[in-house]
Image (cartoon, rainbow, N blue to C red; front, side, top):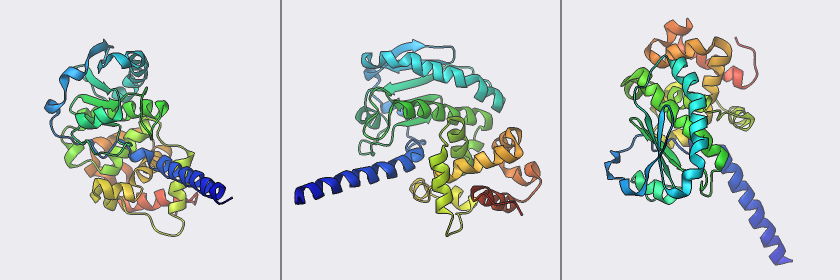
Amino acid sequence: MKELLIHQSLIAMKKNVRRIVLTLLPMVIFLFLTLPTSAGQDADSLSLAKESQHFAFYATKGDLGVLDSLAIILENNYARITNRLGIQIENRIKVKVYPDVKSFHAAIHHPDAPDWVVGSCMGEELLMVSPLNPGSVHNYKSLMQVVVHEFVHIAVYHACGDKAVTVLPKWLNEGYAQYEAGQVNEHIRKTVEASLRDKEPPSWKQLNDASAMEFGHMNGYGLSVTIVEFLVDYYGMDKLVSLIKEPEHIEAIYGMPENTLEKQWAQYIKHEKFE
């Protein structure tokens, strides 16, 4: 009987851990977006295996079977995102698909990174773990969202230039990439709503000023994508794109102070009428 209770407790614990991981999935790919040069990567481990109109895929033989699917999802999202941001990308973007989490972590020079770190981008290179072997946290479907998310970061950099690093708020950069990749769902909305029931949310400035780890601990990724969703739902995508390109002009773009938008967003999350 005692062994049965222990076994049941372990099962319950595993379910709770999995529930927490699912809540934190949006932050999986964002902690290592700014990487040192990739020159130290093992170039011999991957080779050019496929080219589509806008992407060049590098992989091992074991991942050749997934490249067509990655090409389809990227090409299907390419025109929508580039047209929306009003950009053209002249060169093919390199997509490097690593066969497992360990080899990906070695490539980004973070061998001790947790298993939920599965993608990154730098310049016009997109690095990711193979959807065929996503590790202990992700799955095939979530890796297909990861590749779109990382492409959005590359596209935003083309649209903003250095502003993407120096001026663009963290919540806007991450929230928009999640939004375009379809990484907002009812579970995330409910998690954010529940977190705001008994306390005020962090300000947008606090989200922007937080370190990567602080951002994750305050549920910054979930909060950010709901901010973007709110701005699109109530004020339209055109204004959001204007904000991405000129984040310093938020008051002129929306015709109100930023703190008024913040209050409206908090009311949106709580399903309250705007003041």
